[in-house]
Image (cartoon, rainbow, N blue to C red; front, side, top):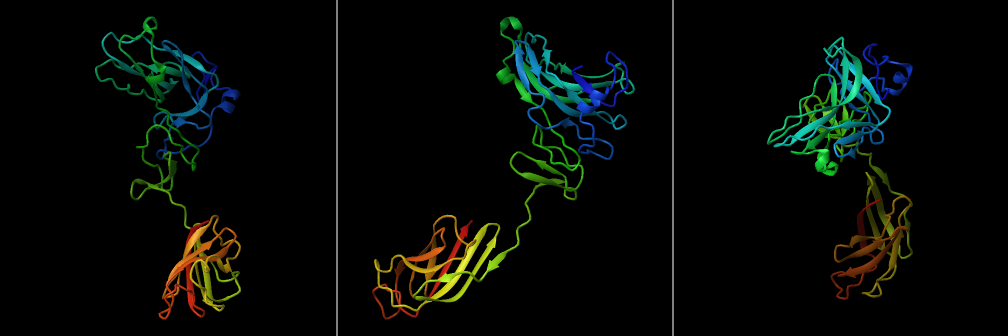
Length: 339
């Protein structure tokens, strides 16, 4: 047996649910759709129910597992397709194209007039019109693929172009509390407050009060700070230092006074070490920090080794015209970088 349903009585051409059926079918509690309904859909994992052309007018559907929901009174049927099946399509209409659907369908004679108890793959034939649409689904069925059958298509004239005729209609479901993977159709509403789904780019959470899916944003990390661990170089005195980190972004603010000799104008001022930042509070690549002393300004390079080095300076005190960095001046260094 290829299409294996669970929780179906004996009857029809198949022996009914076997122990093997129960092991293969996805028996369990899946995403609810209401108080008594289960969200039907394909169980993710690999490429379930993959479709590939198997001839001019034939399509092969691969293995997979799914949940098919009947009426509220019926409940949901777990289904497993344990071997690929090939489905045949009837020839196209002489004048118009049509859209057929490949579906999983459950027959249960306690609830329908089919007179059988079984599940199977079917081709549901659509109407041939100048603007074809996919056919409506019968009860207890799940749409997997839509196939556009061109007017006049037949094996004798080339059949169906499977590279363009297929439209993926697989939608996914997950165990209750699980994240629903992205599949066909994102217009469905959530079943309970706090339900999650993947829209293919971001994670979304169902806001029941607002009746809307909202992009999930993880809680921001607490701010970390440090005021210690910095090593001041010879020729400088540390007045204050603080580093803050939040969500991977580090802000550093330090104030040092020049205790050594006045640093003369470029190029003599270049590459003068001020301090080394503490481990764990350093950039992953070289960044340029801003430095100022109230009279002039410059740049301080901070490397991945934590060394903060004066690179340039412009403007000195009111009595200087040579761009020197005077002895005794307080230099404020600030930087923001991502770790």
